[in-house]
Image 1 (spheres, protein in one colour):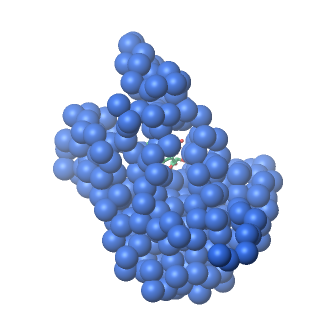
Image 2 (cartoon, helix red, strand yellow):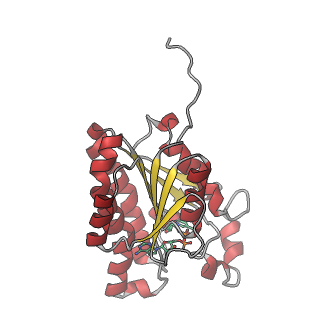
Length: 242
Ligand SMILES: NC(=O)c1ccc[n+]([C@@H]2O[C@H](COP(=O)([O-])OP(=O)(O)OC[C@H]3O[C@@H](n4cnc5c(N)ncnc54)[C@H](O)[C@@H]3O)[C@@H](O)[C@H]2O)c1
């Protein structure tokens, strides 16, 4: 038997890039990495905040813009962890082709474009990618055909890149959040009866908060997860268990 080693959750000193990093989940994950001693770049559509966020290098990036994605990759010297939180849904209007393509372009093509542009840096650091799925990776929703198709695709992309890049030492995983209180879900949660319908399916009976995703994100980036690749972990309060 090998000697017993302490479990290593240390991500201090790692260089982390979070897309959608000024959103609810991306912001909470970026802050958690800062608290854990990592260097964090947060990219998003929205302008860089006037008041700098402590420990976070905020930048503007539309993940659909392949030239801007390539330029960002060329500007970086080192990357250990890529966390892909950029996203939005367009309930009902996703049945229009242009909107369908836009939503798939953000979540699925955007995640692929970011990961492939940053692959050389991740290979150099033997780093990891964290993609963000959804309960709609597994369940259908008539409201969001593009969002659901893209989120299902992200689970498959996670497995595929994990296999393709294992020889480079790059691990590729995902998290599938349940219902988390953010700007994305605010319109749904405000619909009469919708919050009750959702929480009645969650064993603990509570919507999640963005911070609930942070521990899993940091763990998956840490040495403790060195044998974990190609999986998408539900962080959903048991929603998908029922
Ligand atoms: N909130 C939930 O319940 C929930 C559930 C499952 C999955 N998710 C996923 O988690 C991720 C984060 O969502 P959230 O709930 O924090 O929502 P959010 O709206 O708070 O954050 C999403 C961020 O992505 C950014 N974004 C949108 N389009 C972009 C683009 N083209 N390029 C770059 N950035 C872009 C937005 O500006 C925003 O800051 C998304 O992928 C979402 O699909 C959320």
